[in-house]
Amino acid sequence: MPVPEELLSLVRQFDERRDTISAGYFSEARLRRSFVEPMLRILGWDIDNRQGLPEDEREVILSDSPSYTGTLKAPDYCFRIDGIPKFYLEAKKPSADIKHGIRPAYQLRRFAWSANLLFSIFTDFEEFSVYDCRIRPHKDDRASRARVLYLKYDQYPERWQDIASLFSKYVLRLSSFEDHLEPKQKKHGTIEVGESLSGDYEHWRDQLAHNIAVKNKGLSHREQSAAARRIVKRIIFLKICEDRGIEPFGQLRNLLEGGDINSRLGELCGQVLERNKSCLPNFGMENDMSAHDVIIEDILLNHVIESLYYPESPYEFSVMPDEVIGRILAHSTVT
Image (cartoon, rainbow, N blue to C red):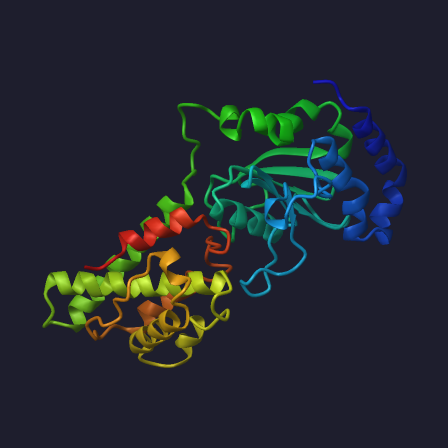
Protein backbone atom coordinates (compact mmCIF):
# COMPACT_ATOMS: atom_id res chain seq x y z
CA MET A 1 0.00 0.00 0.00
CA PRO A 2 1.61 3.30 -1.09
CA VAL A 3 2.14 5.97 1.54
CA PRO A 4 -0.37 8.79 0.94
CA GLU A 5 1.16 12.16 0.14
CA GLU A 6 -1.24 13.69 2.68
CA LEU A 7 0.43 11.67 5.44
CA LEU A 8 3.94 12.69 4.36
CA SER A 9 2.81 16.32 4.40
CA LEU A 10 1.26 15.91 7.85
CA VAL A 11 4.48 14.40 9.25
CA ARG A 12 6.54 17.24 7.75
CA GLN A 13 4.23 19.86 9.26
CA PHE A 14 4.47 18.27 12.70
CA ASP A 15 8.24 18.03 12.46
CA GLU A 16 8.51 21.72 11.51
CA ARG A 17 6.26 22.79 14.42
CA ARG A 18 7.38 20.24 16.97
CA ASP A 19 9.23 22.70 19.21
CA THR A 20 6.20 25.00 19.36
CA ILE A 21 3.87 22.09 20.00
CA SER A 22 6.08 20.58 22.71
CA ALA A 23 6.46 23.98 24.41
CA GLY A 24 2.76 23.91 25.26
CA TYR A 25 1.42 26.38 22.70
CA PHE A 26 -0.89 23.71 21.31
CA SER A 27 -3.96 22.67 23.28
CA GLU A 28 -5.29 19.14 23.09
CA ALA A 29 -8.23 20.33 20.98
CA ARG A 30 -5.93 22.12 18.53
CA LEU A 31 -3.66 19.09 18.27
CA ARG A 32 -6.65 16.91 17.50
CA ARG A 33 -7.91 19.26 14.78
CA SER A 34 -4.48 19.88 13.25
CA PHE A 35 -2.95 16.41 13.27
CA VAL A 36 -4.95 13.55 14.79
CA GLU A 37 -8.16 14.07 12.84
CA PRO A 38 -6.40 14.65 9.49
CA MET A 39 -4.58 11.34 9.98
CA LEU A 40 -7.90 9.62 10.65
CA ARG A 41 -9.37 11.14 7.48
CA ILE A 42 -6.44 9.69 5.55
CA LEU A 43 -7.51 6.31 6.94
CA GLY A 44 -10.91 6.93 5.35
CA TRP A 45 -13.02 7.92 8.35
CA ASP A 46 -15.80 10.50 8.06
CA ILE A 47 -14.83 12.46 11.17
CA ASP A 48 -17.08 15.41 10.29
CA ASN A 49 -20.10 13.32 9.23
CA ARG A 50 -20.11 14.81 5.75
CA GLN A 51 -22.55 12.08 4.79
CA GLY A 52 -25.11 13.81 7.00
CA LEU A 53 -26.02 10.64 8.86
CA PRO A 54 -28.27 10.80 11.94
CA GLU A 55 -26.29 11.09 15.18
CA ASP A 56 -26.81 7.45 16.14
CA GLU A 57 -25.60 6.28 12.69
CA ARG A 58 -22.39 8.31 12.44
CA GLU A 59 -19.19 6.47 11.58
CA VAL A 60 -17.27 8.34 14.25
CA ILE A 61 -18.74 9.20 17.64
CA LEU A 62 -16.96 11.97 19.53
CA SER A 63 -16.99 12.11 23.32
CA ASP A 64 -16.27 15.46 24.96
CA SER A 65 -17.90 14.93 28.34
CA PRO A 66 -17.56 12.55 31.30
CA SER A 67 -19.42 9.27 31.22
CA TYR A 68 -21.99 8.49 33.89
CA THR A 69 -19.30 6.73 35.90
CA GLY A 70 -18.18 9.60 38.09
CA THR A 71 -15.50 11.76 36.50
CA LEU A 72 -14.22 9.22 33.96
CA LYS A 73 -14.50 10.32 30.35
CA ALA A 74 -15.22 7.89 27.55
CA PRO A 75 -12.47 7.70 24.89
CA ASP A 76 -12.42 10.70 22.56
CA TYR A 77 -13.44 8.77 19.44
CA CYS A 78 -15.39 5.60 18.76
CA PHE A 79 -15.09 4.26 15.19
CA ARG A 80 -17.93 2.15 13.82
CA ILE A 81 -18.76 0.09 10.76
CA ASP A 82 -22.51 -0.21 10.10
CA GLY A 83 -23.16 0.97 13.65
CA ILE A 84 -20.88 -1.65 15.22
CA PRO A 85 -17.96 -0.26 17.30
CA LYS A 86 -14.57 -1.36 15.98
CA PHE A 87 -12.04 0.61 18.01
CA TYR A 88 -11.56 3.58 20.30
CA LEU A 89 -8.99 6.35 20.03
CA GLU A 90 -7.93 8.47 22.98
CA ALA A 91 -6.08 11.67 22.06
CA LYS A 92 -3.92 13.48 24.59
CA LYS A 93 -2.26 16.89 24.76
CA PRO A 94 1.27 17.15 23.33
CA SER A 95 2.96 16.98 26.72
CA ALA A 96 1.34 13.64 27.58
CA ASP A 97 3.60 10.66 28.24
CA ILE A 98 2.09 8.15 25.83
CA LYS A 99 4.84 5.60 26.30
CA HIS A 100 4.79 5.45 30.09
CA GLY A 101 1.41 6.87 31.18
CA ILE A 102 -0.18 4.17 33.33
CA ARG A 103 -3.53 5.71 34.26
CA PRO A 104 -4.68 6.88 30.79
CA ALA A 105 -3.61 3.59 29.23
CA TYR A 106 -5.60 1.68 31.87
CA GLN A 107 -8.68 3.85 31.33
CA LEU A 108 -8.59 3.32 27.56
CA ARG A 109 -8.07 -0.43 27.88
CA ARG A 110 -10.82 -0.63 30.49
CA PHE A 111 -13.40 0.95 28.18
CA ALA A 112 -12.29 -1.03 25.12
CA TRP A 113 -12.12 -4.38 26.94
CA SER A 114 -15.57 -3.84 28.45
CA ALA A 115 -16.93 -3.04 24.99
CA ASN A 116 -15.45 -6.28 23.59
CA LEU A 117 -13.18 -4.40 21.18
CA LEU A 118 -9.98 -6.03 19.97
CA PHE A 119 -7.71 -3.00 19.55
CA SER A 120 -7.64 0.67 20.48
CA ILE A 121 -5.30 3.65 20.05
CA PHE A 122 -3.68 6.06 22.49
CA THR A 123 -1.90 8.98 20.79
CA ASP A 124 -0.78 12.61 20.82
CA PHE A 125 0.34 12.22 17.19
CA GLU A 126 4.00 12.47 18.25
CA GLU A 127 3.56 9.00 19.75
CA PHE A 128 1.15 6.28 18.66
CA SER A 129 0.31 3.28 20.89
CA VAL A 130 -1.93 0.39 19.93
CA TYR A 131 -3.34 -1.93 22.61
CA ASP A 132 -4.61 -5.48 22.34
CA CYS A 133 -7.85 -5.06 24.27
CA ARG A 134 -8.55 -8.77 24.64
CA ILE A 135 -6.34 -8.73 27.74
CA ARG A 136 -8.10 -7.94 31.01
CA PRO A 137 -6.78 -4.61 32.33
CA HIS A 138 -5.59 -4.03 35.87
CA LYS A 139 -5.04 -0.68 37.55
CA ASP A 140 -1.40 -1.53 38.32
CA ASP A 141 -0.50 -2.64 34.78
CA ARG A 142 2.46 -0.89 33.23
CA ALA A 143 1.67 1.26 30.19
CA SER A 144 3.44 -1.32 28.05
CA ARG A 145 1.06 -4.10 29.14
CA ALA A 146 -0.95 -5.38 26.14
CA ARG A 147 0.69 -2.85 23.83
CA VAL A 148 1.26 -4.39 20.41
CA LEU A 149 2.52 -1.38 18.46
CA TYR A 150 4.39 1.76 19.49
CA LEU A 151 5.55 4.35 16.93
CA LYS A 152 6.95 7.86 16.86
CA TYR A 153 5.53 10.24 14.27
CA ASP A 154 8.59 10.00 11.99
CA GLN A 155 7.99 6.24 11.69
CA TYR A 156 4.48 6.63 10.25
CA PRO A 157 5.54 6.57 6.59
CA GLU A 158 7.64 3.40 6.89
CA ARG A 159 5.01 1.67 9.08
CA TRP A 160 1.94 2.96 7.26
CA GLN A 161 1.05 -0.55 6.08
CA ASP A 162 0.86 -1.71 9.71
CA ILE A 163 -1.36 1.20 10.70
CA ALA A 164 -3.68 1.01 7.69
CA SER A 165 -4.04 -2.77 7.86
CA LEU A 166 -5.59 -2.42 11.31
CA PHE A 167 -7.43 0.90 11.26
CA SER A 168 -8.32 1.83 7.68
CA LYS A 169 -12.09 2.03 7.24
CA TYR A 170 -11.86 0.39 3.85
CA VAL A 171 -9.82 -2.54 5.17
CA LEU A 172 -12.23 -3.03 8.08
CA ARG A 173 -15.18 -3.06 5.70
CA LEU A 174 -13.63 -5.91 3.73
CA SER A 175 -12.15 -7.84 6.63
CA SER A 176 -11.90 -7.61 10.39
CA PHE A 177 -9.33 -7.42 13.15
CA GLU A 178 -9.65 -11.16 13.58
CA ASP A 179 -7.97 -11.65 10.19
CA HIS A 180 -4.78 -10.21 11.68
CA LEU A 181 -4.78 -12.42 14.78
CA GLU A 182 -3.42 -15.90 15.31
CA PRO A 183 -6.26 -18.14 14.03
CA LYS A 184 -5.65 -21.08 16.35
CA GLN A 185 -3.94 -19.49 19.30
CA LYS A 186 -5.24 -17.58 22.26
CA LYS A 187 -2.73 -15.01 23.38
CA HIS A 188 -1.62 -15.41 26.97
CA GLY A 189 -3.79 -13.33 29.28
CA THR A 190 -6.68 -12.79 26.89
CA ILE A 191 -10.18 -13.25 28.24
CA GLU A 192 -13.52 -11.93 27.02
CA VAL A 193 -15.28 -9.52 29.33
CA GLY A 194 -18.33 -11.78 29.65
CA GLU A 195 -16.22 -14.77 30.62
CA SER A 196 -14.32 -12.66 33.14
CA LEU A 197 -17.46 -11.18 34.72
CA SER A 198 -19.03 -14.61 34.92
CA GLY A 199 -15.94 -15.90 36.72
CA ASP A 200 -15.97 -12.98 39.16
CA TYR A 201 -19.69 -13.48 39.72
CA GLU A 202 -19.15 -17.13 40.69
CA HIS A 203 -16.25 -16.20 42.97
CA TRP A 204 -18.33 -13.61 44.78
CA ARG A 205 -21.28 -16.00 45.02
CA ASP A 206 -19.08 -18.70 46.56
CA GLN A 207 -17.72 -16.24 49.14
CA LEU A 208 -21.18 -15.04 50.14
CA ALA A 209 -22.68 -18.53 50.17
CA HIS A 210 -20.01 -19.73 52.60
CA ASN A 211 -20.69 -16.82 54.94
CA ILE A 212 -24.46 -17.30 54.67
CA ALA A 213 -24.04 -20.97 55.56
CA VAL A 214 -22.10 -20.03 58.70
CA LYS A 215 -24.49 -17.29 59.80
CA ASN A 216 -27.83 -18.90 58.82
CA LYS A 217 -27.88 -22.50 60.05
CA GLY A 218 -31.59 -22.90 59.40
CA LEU A 219 -31.31 -22.52 55.63
CA SER A 220 -30.88 -25.45 53.30
CA HIS A 221 -27.92 -25.60 50.93
CA ARG A 222 -30.21 -24.64 48.06
CA GLU A 223 -31.56 -21.64 49.98
CA GLN A 224 -28.05 -20.52 50.89
CA SER A 225 -26.91 -20.70 47.28
CA ALA A 226 -30.06 -18.95 46.03
CA ALA A 227 -29.62 -16.11 48.53
CA ALA A 228 -25.97 -15.63 47.54
CA ARG A 229 -26.85 -15.55 43.84
CA ARG A 230 -29.61 -13.05 44.41
CA ILE A 231 -27.39 -10.71 46.41
CA VAL A 232 -24.63 -10.68 43.79
CA LYS A 233 -27.23 -10.21 41.07
CA ARG A 234 -28.64 -7.16 42.87
CA ILE A 235 -25.21 -5.59 43.25
CA ILE A 236 -24.30 -6.05 39.57
CA PHE A 237 -27.73 -4.85 38.47
CA LEU A 238 -27.51 -1.66 40.52
CA LYS A 239 -24.00 -0.92 39.22
CA ILE A 240 -25.25 -1.35 35.64
CA CYS A 241 -28.01 1.17 36.33
CA GLU A 242 -25.44 3.64 37.65
CA ASP A 243 -22.98 3.23 34.80
CA ARG A 244 -25.72 3.69 32.22
CA GLY A 245 -27.12 6.80 33.86
CA ILE A 246 -30.43 5.20 34.82
CA GLU A 247 -29.74 5.86 38.48
CA PRO A 248 -27.45 8.38 40.25
CA PHE A 249 -23.80 7.42 40.30
CA GLY A 250 -22.52 6.20 43.68
CA GLN A 251 -25.81 5.28 45.37
CA LEU A 252 -24.77 1.62 45.58
CA ARG A 253 -21.48 2.60 47.18
CA ASN A 254 -23.34 4.82 49.63
CA LEU A 255 -24.76 1.66 51.21
CA LEU A 256 -21.32 1.06 52.68
CA GLU A 257 -21.69 4.07 54.97
CA GLY A 258 -24.13 2.28 57.27
CA GLY A 259 -24.68 -1.17 58.74
CA ASP A 260 -27.01 -3.98 57.68
CA ILE A 261 -25.96 -3.59 54.03
CA ASN A 262 -27.89 -6.62 52.77
CA SER A 263 -31.24 -5.38 54.03
CA ARG A 264 -30.74 -1.90 52.58
CA LEU A 265 -29.43 -3.43 49.35
CA GLY A 266 -32.73 -5.27 48.90
CA GLU A 267 -34.72 -2.12 49.63
CA LEU A 268 -32.70 -0.07 47.13
CA CYS A 269 -33.05 -2.71 44.43
CA GLY A 270 -36.80 -2.80 44.88
CA GLN A 271 -36.98 0.99 44.64
CA VAL A 272 -34.89 1.04 41.47
CA LEU A 273 -37.08 -1.63 39.90
CA GLU A 274 -40.20 0.35 40.72
CA ARG A 275 -38.76 3.62 39.36
CA ASN A 276 -37.54 2.12 36.11
CA LYS A 277 -40.08 -0.46 35.05
CA SER A 278 -40.02 0.63 31.41
CA CYS A 279 -36.30 0.04 30.83
CA LEU A 280 -35.49 -2.84 33.15
CA PRO A 281 -36.69 -5.70 30.90
CA ASN A 282 -33.65 -4.99 28.70
CA PHE A 283 -31.47 -6.13 31.58
CA GLY A 284 -33.35 -9.37 32.11
CA MET A 285 -34.01 -8.45 35.73
CA GLU A 286 -36.89 -10.35 37.30
CA ASN A 287 -38.79 -9.01 40.28
CA ASP A 288 -37.39 -11.49 42.77
CA MET A 289 -36.79 -9.07 45.62
CA SER A 290 -38.86 -11.02 48.17
CA ALA A 291 -35.87 -13.22 49.02
CA HIS A 292 -34.92 -14.79 52.32
CA ASP A 293 -33.73 -12.23 54.84
CA VAL A 294 -30.30 -13.60 55.55
CA ILE A 295 -27.56 -12.55 57.92
CA ILE A 296 -24.30 -11.80 56.13
CA GLU A 297 -21.21 -9.93 57.21
CA ASP A 298 -21.02 -6.39 55.89
CA ILE A 299 -17.30 -6.71 55.21
CA LEU A 300 -17.97 -9.23 52.44
CA LEU A 301 -20.58 -7.06 50.75
CA ASN A 302 -18.23 -4.12 51.10
CA HIS A 303 -15.57 -6.08 49.18
CA VAL A 304 -17.91 -7.05 46.33
CA ILE A 305 -19.31 -3.54 45.93
CA GLU A 306 -15.90 -1.86 46.00
CA SER A 307 -14.68 -4.39 43.43
CA LEU A 308 -17.12 -2.92 40.91
CA TYR A 309 -15.92 0.69 41.20
CA TYR A 310 -13.01 2.35 39.42
CA PRO A 311 -10.08 1.93 39.77
CA GLU A 312 -10.47 -1.54 41.31
CA SER A 313 -12.98 -2.64 38.69
CA PRO A 314 -11.94 -3.36 35.08
CA TYR A 315 -15.63 -3.24 34.09
CA GLU A 316 -17.32 -0.28 32.43
CA PHE A 317 -20.99 -1.22 32.11
CA SER A 318 -21.87 1.89 30.11
CA VAL A 319 -20.22 0.38 27.02
CA MET A 320 -20.60 -3.33 27.77
CA PRO A 321 -22.72 -5.04 25.06
CA ASP A 322 -26.31 -5.77 26.07
CA GLU A 323 -25.92 -9.44 25.16
CA VAL A 324 -23.05 -9.80 27.64
CA ILE A 325 -25.06 -8.17 30.42
CA GLY A 326 -28.10 -10.26 29.49
CA ARG A 327 -26.12 -13.49 29.75
CA ILE A 328 -24.72 -12.57 33.15
CA LEU A 329 -28.07 -11.60 34.67
CA ALA A 330 -29.86 -14.57 33.11
CA HIS A 331 -27.13 -16.87 34.44
CA SER A 332 -27.66 -15.46 37.92
CA THR A 333 -31.44 -15.75 37.87
CA VAL A 334 -32.79 -17.47 40.94
CA THR A 335 -35.77 -19.77 40.51
